[in-house]
Structures are given as C-alpha cells and as structure tokens.
Length: 156
Image (cartoon, rainbow, N blue to C red; front, side, top):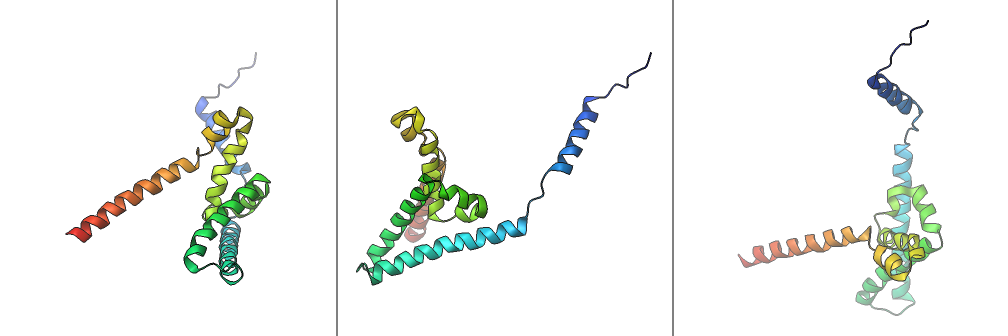
C-alpha cells in the first residue's frame, strides 16, 4: 500500500497564488497612461472646436456657448455609447474617457441600455443613474458644503 501525502489547504492556497501571479498579464502602465492622456485631451480639443465653431459660425455669444458645449458633449457621449463606439474608445483609452463630461454621459446611458429589456420604468428609468447617482450626490453635497464654508468666511 502506498501512503498518500496529505496536502493542507494552506499549501493549496499558496500554490494557487503562485500560479495566479505567474499567469496574470502584466499591465502596460506607461502605454495606458499615454493613451488615456491623448484620448482625454482629444475629447477636450473636440469640445474646444465645437466652442469655436458655435461662436464663429453659429452666431452665439460667449455665455450661450458655455452652456451649449457641455450639452453637445453630453449628447455626443450618449450617442456614441448608444451605437457602441464609446465603449471601444474606453477599452483603448481607459481613464482618458472617464474624466471628461462625455464619461458622465456614458455612465448614465450604459446602465439604461443594459436594463432596457426590463421595461421603461423598472429598467431604463430605475437603472439610469445607478453609476452616475453617487457622482451627482457627491458633487451636489460637496458643493453645498463648500458654499456654506464660503458664506461663513465672507460673513465673518
């Protein structure tokens, strides 16, 4: 009779960790940072081009243009998400697509599209702000706190 060596759970766990680390793909940090930088910058350049076109050819004044550009960029982000292009750009550029306002638009539209099969109310409407909701809450909450601090500093 041969005796089998009993392997402890700790040894199995250690072997698993070793194999996982050896086979895990290494991130290309420099390449990812460069892609995020130039794609995020390109999105901002597109916004600037829209701004200049609205003033030069649209006949809008500076104040109106400052309101129109974010609306157009949100629309473009939602449109590109809807037709499946924004996710491909995000896969390539990573965080470069999250920071501009188009990333916010993508975070609203993506869950809405994912849950559309559940219906308009319980799917699209209920899930639309699943990701963007915390961003809105934090943004609004922090602006209230900053506003109160600013008010108190001006008062005293």
